[in-house]
Length: 393
Image (cartoon, rainbow, N blue to C red; front, side, top):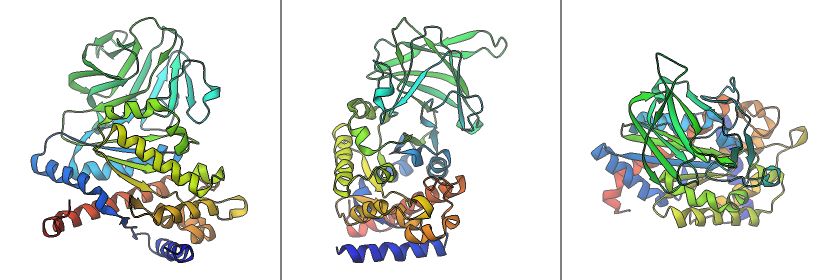
């Protein structure tokens, strides 16, 4: 495809996105998602089991508003199978996030894009973060504020065997007494707990003495069939940072992903990573995912619009989007065009980008997530109506 023609196409799409907020980018090369669509059809026929969707990316994916729009749309149509993967990104009582983590001792929290800032022995597992403490007196409280997200199956992700954490609830009569839950089974990287009554708050405590307690993540589920949506977003991260942490890929099978959505490019753009290197890292990321999760379908999104000083368009994002959208061998959703591109730079309020010229308002992220999942479900409905006629698989 001619580079200049592609840029012209992206600019036209950008104008459409700015002019019409209901405009939805179609998914390119959606045929690569057909195995995932087959799983959805089977699920709708049987109403059994879970559909696991994993979204990996940077701070845009970390945003609660972006992930919430995707999660709620999927669960509204297919059922709520559980909250999915969670992680203590911060230990603040008023963190303004749907899940609150608090503790009586300090924990080290560091990222895979700055490993030298971490203590020796820190693990960068599934979350893309290291989270650890050397105190054996810790109590880590996890509370979810939405009653519809209550859970009764809890999976603690860690490399330690036997488990170094124990899980507890608080007696409703005597809140000073912990009631320890017995884990049902120990699998590679995960201890699985289950109780009959759904809860909204649990406590993690030490199970045995360790030099350093590393927590790689927590997965919350319920007994209902439906979608479990796992979002893993790391602030400041690039695809290469995940590729450089083997434990991340070793732990991914714990999530049993049926669909993996990949969203990177913003931090690479500000780091002036060349287009070929960026795309090579995306390709390597997909290869690494397929090695450990061969049955997962993959959807890649282009990076959203970002701006430089004085509101100048960050051209790197355009170059990344152009390079990705020329591909015919992967499924793609053009977030760049949806967020306006050059037209968005001229009218940043229309795309709801914040004053830092990188992140978006909650409403902006909600619109992006809603449009992405609308595009996916549109392709799914088209597939259901036509796959028997076309024979597509």
